[in-house]
Image (cartoon, rainbow, N blue to C red; front, side):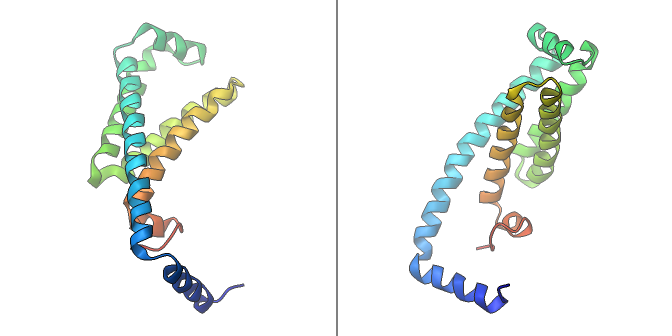
Length: 150
């Protein structure tokens, strides 16, 4: 078991070996990449939710094939659109990420129930949303135990 001083010494050694500016540049690039990816995911999810809201025929058929009644499409779509909008607002982004992850978890569970390998797709979308938030919010990284705030 490592003591706090061992961890502190390791952090200091890492900081001396890799200058902060290098780490900040890398973090900036990663944050930009995940910003673009998270915005693409958000756009995809908003279109997905909007299609459910207006009962677009392929989406209604998909709901029915998954065992959901067609009339639930608008409620499901509304929930998704609101969750993603909350994610896009910086002040409510963590709440939006939690709600969107819940939605995507339900989608993954539905696909697992149908023994469909596409269950990994909603999991990957949620991972992208959280990766960007963790890169953008040092306090969130600290809360999740992913690194100290800068």
